[in-house]
Image 1 (spheres, rainbow, N blue to C red):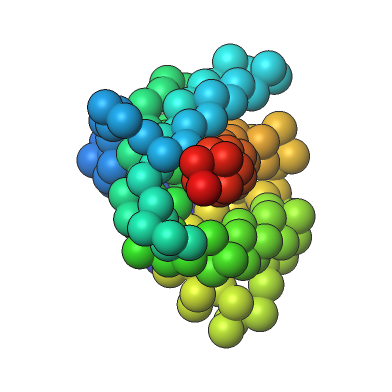
Image 2: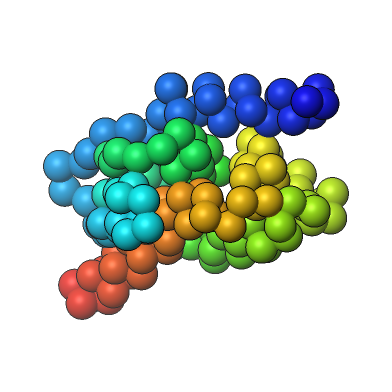
Length: 153
């Protein structure tokens, strides 16, 4: 195993244990529950918004270290970002997952920060859904939060 592969593995294991953003909110602006039927991983993502900015994102779930680590990494990446910026990061992460382990351009990879560690996961099609689970929940929760704010006006 190369040094880079070892570093990526450590990032994933650290995030699986530390779980940034783990917990639930009392009154979220948006919430999404997602399940990966292939393996049983599940997550509830909740968020609070300030206008179009994700002020706070938290989650609770269970599953493999890949899904849990990916959600943890995503939390740190999207908090404080606009919904548009969070969706751009989702698009980049999806591109990385669809690369089948070949990776993406360096400038795109740099924007993903610790999420770039999942490049090796992309080599295993069965694990891609695990890595994307929380990201899909984040997108759904932002859509729900935006529609709820629109209804309240």
